[in-house]
Image (cartoon, rainbow, N blue to C red; front, side, top):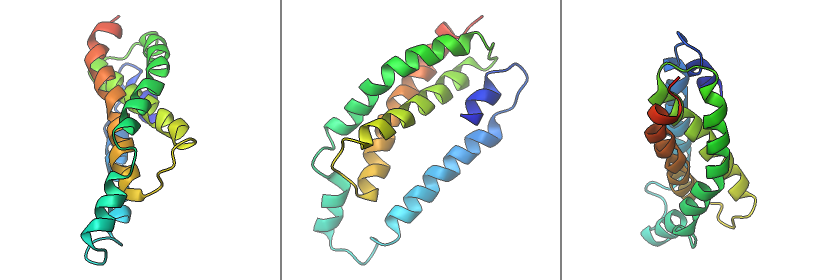
Length: 140
């Protein structure tokens, strides 16, 4: 959210916030992979990675995020972002992670590998949409 706030105002720099997001994702993957590498046979690894709902999970997260993304892009336009692609992508990522949190309330999968893969892919759907729509929707 802080990254969106920074990039939404002219002249603000969001590079540090974007780096923080990348560090958070890498840290999550490190924690998820550390116990499984070398100690778990291939079948449980595949089971934990793929789960039962890997096909639906990213799609549902993407669909849940769309109304939030539409409202957020509309509101972000009034803040006057200069880097419209970055602003659209960041607000899309925020909406995607919020949608993933909402979806997690109903999902039966709880493996870190599953969450780190399919929830992240689900969050990247609105990120891509926000990045693509940013130049059109956010120009002022």
